[in-house]
Image 1 (cartoon, helix red, strand yellow):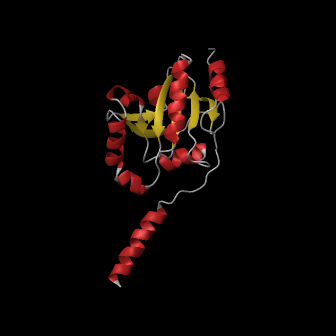
Image 2: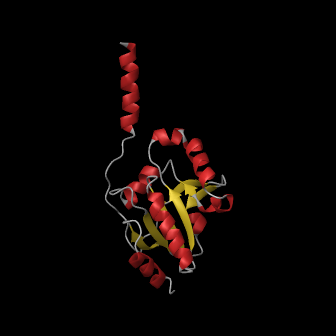
Image 3: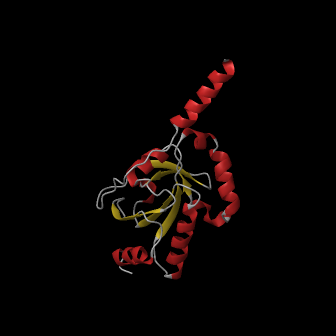
Length: 175
């Protein structure tokens, strides 16, 4: 009987953190929602507040498979010499990942050169809020948000990577 109670408690804890299917609530011209994260350097970050004063590109990933899209974005930005500050934002919802955030972040640190750690900001506590905002349908696709210098959304793309999306961003930036 006691084993069954523990099993039900564990099952309840895990399913209580279940992912839900959200549609995007992003509206161009509206402010980005405020969320808290931490860079791989260990610095607390408040988004978008800590990024104000310049246009910024946020590359959000909800699953490890999103890294493929994010890498293509970073390579394309570099190859086209797009002048923009870009940040990778791994966004992981649920209590279970938060419990293992140190382990997850250390795994990312092992795979990312130290000089790039400041450009990777993990979001755990606000992970569900971010996914509710940007939508999490097709969760393997990276989400791309271009913010203006005041933290307002200039562009949003939720289908991974596409050259046409890159060109739209470059046009918005006057490049």
